[in-house]
Amino acid sequence: MTACSLRGLHWFQALGRDAVEANDVPPSLRVADGRLGEWPVRYLAVVADAHNRFVRARQGEVGLVEGWGLAQAVEQAIAADRDQSCKRVLVAIVDVPSQAYGRREEALGIHQALAAAADSYARARLAGHPVIALLVGKAMSGAFLAHGYQANRLIALADDGVMVHAMGKASAARVTLRSVEELEALAASVPPVAYDIDSYASLGLLWRTLTVSDAEHPSMADLGRVVECLIEAVKDIQRSGPDLSCRLGASNRAASSRVRELLRAQW
Amino acid sequence: MADPTQLLHKRSFVELSARQRARALLDSGSFRELIDPFERLMSPWLAKQGVVPQADDGVVIAKGLVDGLPVVVAAIEGAFQGGSLGEVGGAKIAGALELAADDNRKGIATRALLLLETGGVRLQEANLGLAAIAEIHAAIVDLRQYQPVIGVIAGSVGCFGGMSIAAGLCSYLVVTQEARLGLNGPLVIEQEAGVEEYDSRDRPFIWSLTGGEQRVACQLADRYVADEVSQIRSEVSALLQQGLPPVPRSQQSGYYLQRLKALDTTAPIDPATVRHLYQGER
Image 1 (cartoon, each protein chain N blue to C red):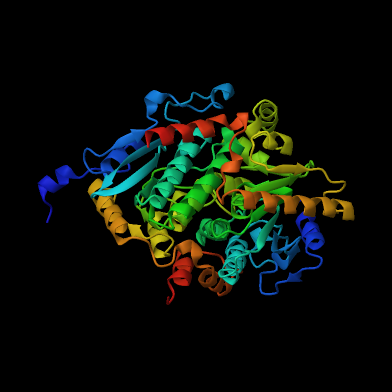
Image 2 (image 1 turned 45 degrees about the horizontal axis):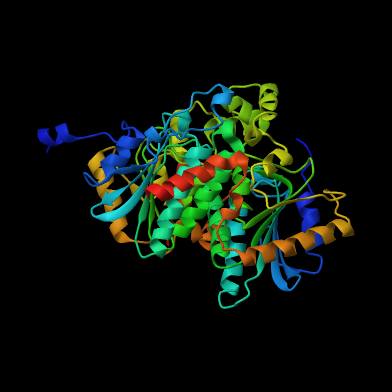
């Protein structure tokens, strides 16, 4: 196995350096409250925990405890801000290699844990919390659906280590009865199956891609650039509604808009 | 007592196509399909990968009534590409749910019924399938503020991947013995974690952990029904009449975290352990 990614942890530490960290979350989650410009903010990250009781979630995967734990951490923010006119910003720092794959996970309903996390993020957005996902590493499949994909705005670092995909290459090859080489050749001409962030950006789902000098170890300048972008994102969210319509419009995703037009016309 | 006329009228639901299923659950004469196959709105991505597309992209959207209540049905065709969701099929479901939520904001109490036979993301459209599924999740959570969203998993494909998360967001889940519900398909777990962790060919083992009966016994699904059209229809209707659950399953983090804390994670897992853990006193 390759070493666990530390990107999420590093960005969490950098963004949350003046924030107060929650101590009532599982060790595989990092949650901290601070300020982002003029707004209160809660940063959330899933990190590797070598001693995770669930062995299939020791490398930063989103497993049972991580799904339910994220759900609870977001739920707490919704409840705490229920009567506030200014709801805190939620920033999901995304560096998740996958969901946890295992017998124990399936038996105990990992799908339900991930649903809980998606549910909380979506309700936070509907309640008026600006929700932003900052992609600093991998954003894979079910893990990304649980942690980040419900955000109002998706921001990704322009870096080779940042990728969004539905399945790891080896499994995707096996399930589609192709070789990994065939899969890679195909990815070059079919943007939605590619693993690189530029192909992903062509689908129109990202609000911004950001160039930084070091995606692994953010410099002060990198941090400043990201904070500035997060602030811009909050302002942009406040100018529009809580839905996800800003993800539509790219030519590589024209059918998604066409389907909605037709449905509306025939409804 | 076996009534021969009743036996003759028994109709399997599992054997029906997606379109037949949607029709079978709606009040007679109320079925109206949106973006039907004659629109020929097909996947723009499959042909260039040598896969023959289908005119409805494997998803049927229909409006109609269930015992007089307004409902939109999204039925996934398990026989086309394993019920996988690509850009078009995914957008059909997300878009229909978005319009149902809009209806409710305008005072029209449209409910939703999802007939789930799906392996999740269609890998030939990978990131567009994943994005559509995120939008389906968003739309379920939105609509569920107003009216129930009911998921039916009948089999034989089952419900996996990102759509198992959608199932977890539903207000209620109806399952049969043929149904399976899990995040990761058996083949993928075997690939990622090894055959000793999960043997994808061991069907009794897989059903014992993720099958419909087990999911209901563990309170991860709500109703266990026979594979029979009228029974599924009457369960769906009863749940629609019942309205929203007090607390959706996906909002019970405190309870589930506490249950997981009580589990011995060093011991091997078996179906009885999960039933015992999740059935506890509520």
